[in-house]
Length: 74
Image (cartoon, rainbow, N blue to C red; front, side, top):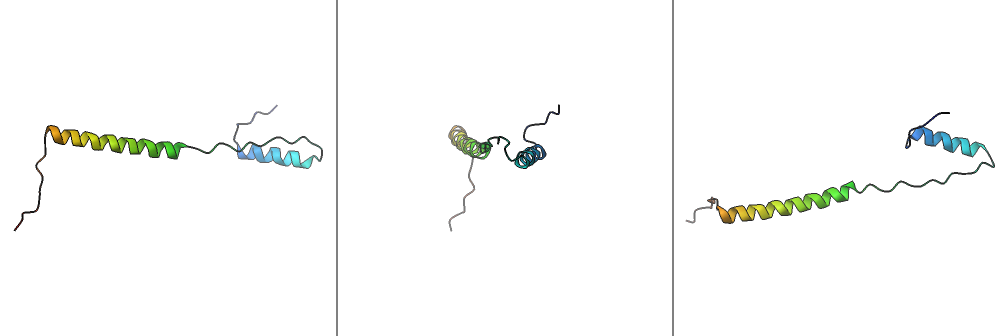
C-alpha cells in the first residue's frame, strides 16, 4: 500500500482522475481549505505594536523631554 502526504497536488489529481474514470465509483467530497488568516492577524498585531510604541514614546518624552530643533522665527 502506498502512503501519500496530505495536500500533495499530484495525489489529489491522481485521485480525481481515478474517480472520474470509473462511471459508478463513489465520489469523495472535496472540502475547500479554510482561508489563511495570518495576514489579518499580522495586521492587527502590527497596529497594536505601533500603538504601544507611540504610548511608550509619549511616556518617555514626559519623563525626560528631548530638546526639539525648531525653525528660528525672524
